[in-house]
Image (cartoon, rainbow, N blue to C red; front, side, top):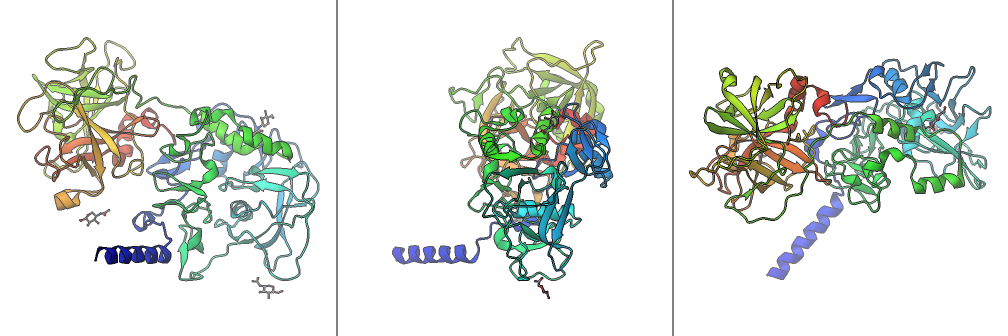
Length: 590
Ligand SMILES: *[C@@H]1O[C@H](CO)[C@@H](O)[C@H](O)[C@H]1NC(C)=O
Ligand SMILES: *[C@@H]1O[C@H](CO)[C@@H](O)[C@H](O)[C@H]1NC(C)=O
Ligand SMILES: *[C@@H]1O[C@H](CO)[C@@H](O)[C@H](O)[C@H]1NC(C)=O
């Protein structure tokens, strides 16, 4: 009986596997994510993230560094970033060349031998050359083909990276050039051209650009967000076939040869450990051998790239390196770093006692003579807490205590701050606990310009709900009650796991968009009364702490069937930045 069951299970598994090598996540696809969705990818350095979408920066917001570039309309720009942000508003100004503008310079792309103007063999004339040259077929891919088509005005990119109508094109291209693009360039001149010593056996690269189709070409086609249809087999393989990346952004797993970011995005395998963060949580740059971590991002060309480039002669400046360099010049904020790493200590019922510097973002909110709630320092003068912890007319009665570890044995690091301003989410509902989030601004001391909060470090704020996934182990901390009734006076913490969908525990009282929940199998660690308003932080692969939740509510502390419910902070990134300013809390995409 058991054997039979096992066999049938196995059989079903095989069937399921064969029928559906489909890694796409339906629910995610309905959000229509593209390369401009900053909850899935980083914006370009000339873009910023506003309400989940990468939009053009104004040129003056570009970092100061970088070298000058010339546009197709022969206008000189101080940097590549400035040109790209200007191009956003004035698309006729495309990138032409790195350096200054000389008269007469042109870069052209044309398609030859095609039946239609939108297809054919690709020819280019580089800026420093008078000749039109073919591109080599052997290193040619859909990534470059998409850029060629976009360059020629086909926003959806290429249908195929081949042109093969049997009208007798059987030619060789012994003097062809190689080209490498990142895939999102608007002009082929932004890609890196090079010449190999031996291209005698090469044939020329061709392309069939995409023309609008009304009907899907086959029932198994995948419809990209830009409307283009691609074969389903080309989704979740790390390659941006759609040209808007929509085939790679909602993947529960990735095909071989590509890397799966925890945010369910597939990137090419060679983006892993290449010194640039591509996954929003940086998981592609962690556990790398040697010093190739994202900290070395500004060192430009890597060793293996140097070797390849020595064999092939570069024909233009590498603007991908320039893009990386600009990225490294963007302002950075420091958050989520602890000066010490937690050490093992005697376990205390329902959690462990915290020591100095372990939770430098944790604050206590005191009302009259009582610690009423926890709060989280997020930078500047700003504290986040739960809306149910505070009343608008009581701001003058609250005190924010930083550095507090034990309410009975006060430690010397404690600082007490008055509250200047209290902002409660205007859609907070005291009956459903929806939008249970509030901001406190502490008063500056004396006539200081900035808030001085020694012994604190802000927690990082997540900007995307895809940063941490169910089952991730996170940390809750607070001064709350232990078990049901006994009082606790010291800061405690414990590990809890994120739980996928709490509707099964709380049915209609759980609002998925605004809340999240976390707990342990046996309910031994939980947030309880008094912990309210305090942090649930999750660590990324570099041990940087993100404020993933604010302790909000829950039934019967410490029962596994009633996990703790938290305000989903990622859902409020724009709300928070509206009051505190984007520059204070945005790590990237500013
Ligand atoms: C190939 O070329 C012929 C003319 O030579 C044309 O009639 C046909 O439509 C073309 N086929 C494709 C797939 O482009
Ligand atoms: C662009 O040209 C300048 C000199 O004009 C040079 O210093 C810089 O390195 C070049 N940028 C790239 C990406 O090659
Ligand atoms: C969560 O569970 C509820 C009810 O059990 C269901 O209606 C909802 O679709 C689920 N959401 C997800 C993302 O699975």
